[in-house]
Length: 215
Length: 147
Image (tube, rainbow over all chains, first blue to last red; front, side, top):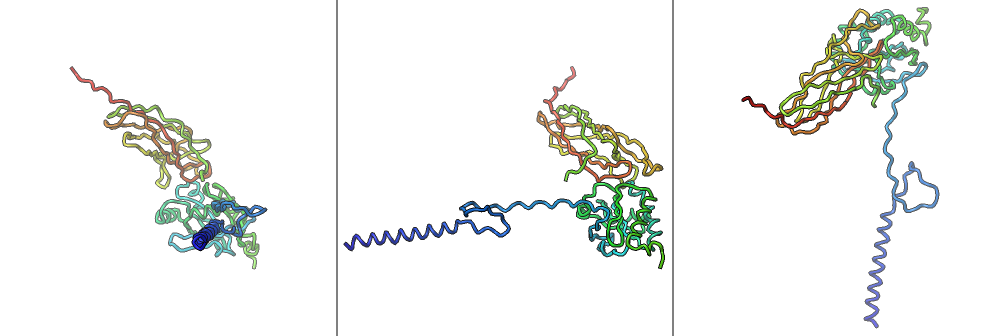
């Protein structure tokens, strides 16, 4: 009797051990509880395959800033390597001009901008020329010297182009008032008188006292 | 981001060449209205010239490229300054050459036109226009011997 019981008991122990092993491996194979940000279908939990993480969607290029909107802030390097942040010029009217050495219409308006910087600088105008160029800093600096540029030149990047809605046409000029809002946008070359009118508007928007010279 | 284009590839002439020989070829491009592109020799050094480039297999060479002369034009943005430009259709000529060891067959060649376009008051960033054309390399021509 004993001889029959022992093998049976042994079999029982082995079988229960096997069952325990298979149960624990099934637990390991169960999908992890879903993360809080993953959507789950309503209804009883099923033994579904884990949901793969969605691919990151590329960020869309922002729309170009429009009149009345805040000009997107940025930090760019000048030709000496110093960083300049647009928001540091709050309180000034800014003419933000995107240009390139290979852009002939850009070259036409540069002497006008030089004259306007001289004329309206004392009233708080700051002209910034952002070079959207593959030319070296040395070449851009030489070009700016040749043109007699008396305003800030910054080196443009792909990122600044994206921030301003994708720059695919030059010259492109934003007029920004003393509070940092866009007052005008000009795509392409405009006449010197149109540029001057837009400068006056940017200067007069937030501080008419400064524009009229009254104390 | 593809962006807009300003020049279209129209055609390449039929290119058939025997190993060890050369044959003329021409490439026709069309500048869309109302744009113009700088010619291959713009009048100032900052301007970006129109240039043709190729990715070539060992069996094919392209040489002696002849660009057309640019039209001298002035534009409303600067009536006093002349620019050397292409507008409308323009043709670039060259020679296709096959070394003596080239195996016969049809080869698809990849070319690229680099250009920079403007209109009457704006300029647009430089672009590259890819295109392909076929070159047929025939069997070796029989040599003629004088008697």
